[in-house]
Image 1 (spheres, rainbow, N blue to C red):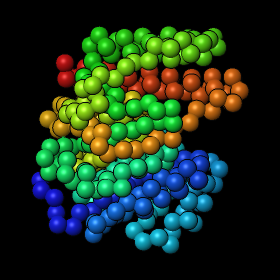
Image 2 (cartoon, one colour):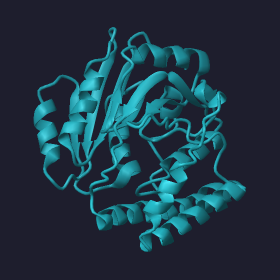
Image 3 (spheres, helix red, strand yellow):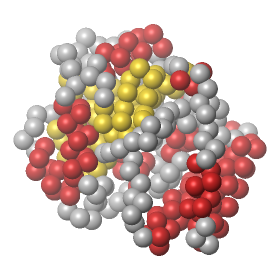
Length: 290
């Protein structure tokens, strides 16, 4: 599939909670060098409970090529994003669709040129950029190999231990201990790579993927969407690619001032949903292909 003369990009920003953060993500899109390309932005308000969706709507409704969709209920990450993905695909006929967290900011001014150069040479289905957090952590690639077999069992076992530790209020101590032994990235992982698992906070979908699917696998509510996406691509002979030349800042801020009980509640939510997602992944994705 070749790139058309006038390329149409659609950015899907899933909004929940903080209008200021979402507008920072939107401003980073507006600041890009379009170079004659068509660029649309779709904000999907995932039933924010604090009225911030309306705040965002008021700020973007007068902007050209901006669209606002309100979900009546919180559909979770995959289904919430898919609302915007389907609109971009079916209504806007976008050539490239970008799913980005509302706390992600694009740092590469030549974003479009880099994406198109990579697609011309690599014909990727899904592209992931370099994603840096406030503490300097690189989030891509998530994994070099698909999660299955012993690694899958080990991951599930770790989550059960994490769940127990969270119930006993000792998970912060374990986290502090693990941070003393961070995983060092190899030189290979700092270079462009093909067929690796990509972080879900910023995903670029090409015509090769858009022509086959209507977004992410929607069998999960939250977490582990990356494992489902990577398996889908590998089973369908679609290339995933990590390109560190494209730079994203992921303002993933952990609220350390929150009370211990609030942190515990948030961690329990994450771990429980990870276990639910991996149960489906093990049974319906990996299990059916083994």
